[in-house]
Length: 142
Image (cartoon, rainbow, N blue to C red; front, side, top):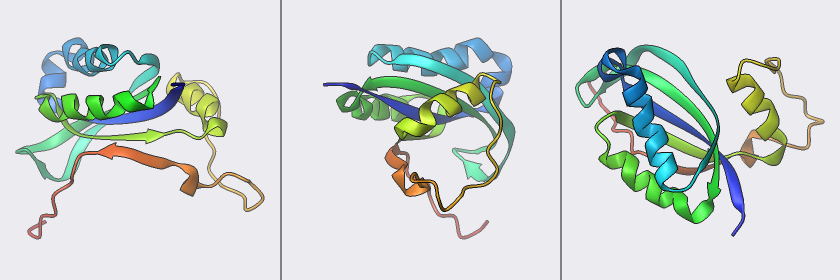
């Protein structure tokens, strides 16, 4: 089976990340290593207040990863992430071929930001297919 390129966004516990950045991101990279993924790029993307508390946490760090792996291994990654104490939420999407190089360049601090989409583009956002995501609870009190 051929390897597929994915984007993984992992919401990490800010307190754990602040006290041990290498260990917390190492947990995510270790899970990717266990499933045989080849990590193409990683980046701590955004650290800040959450819209609502997740597992009692009001702050979180978004950790962005790009990796290639056989598609049948993604479900195993999903299971491992749900058991992790460092990861509060996650989202994994399959990247369209046209977006792989620009997205990896952006994660590595290269390339330019695309701010508009043109109707003439043959690709669309509907080509981005969500593969696995942790359930997000609806909190009526927020």
